[in-house]
Image (cartoon, rainbow, N blue to C red; front, side, top):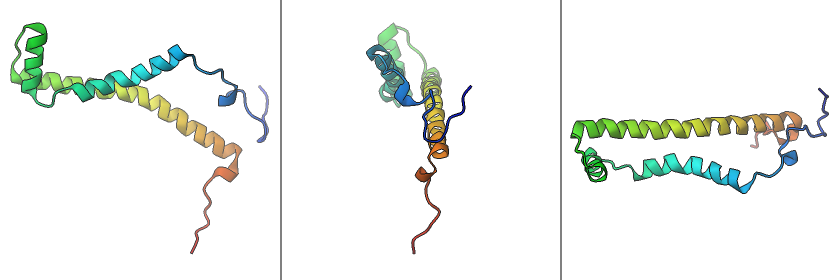
Length: 114
């Protein structure tokens, strides 16, 4: 394990990483798009959801069951989006704090203009 000076870059910097392949970038976009599209397409009223289920499967469900199904689908989409967003947010915050530690000039100044 080596010690890096402030003007040297560490091996984990983004510049030394190879560019992502098109397949990997496409899969990342699809991972974001599926739950977001699910939330966008999900009907807002339980009666519409019950009708869609009846048309798609041939089975009718009650409005109460459709309301519970809708809430479950919304929760599932939100949980999926949060599982995708939280690691990315953690990486962004870590990169910002790492940049501020290595380059203190990037930190916001405490001097206030009058």
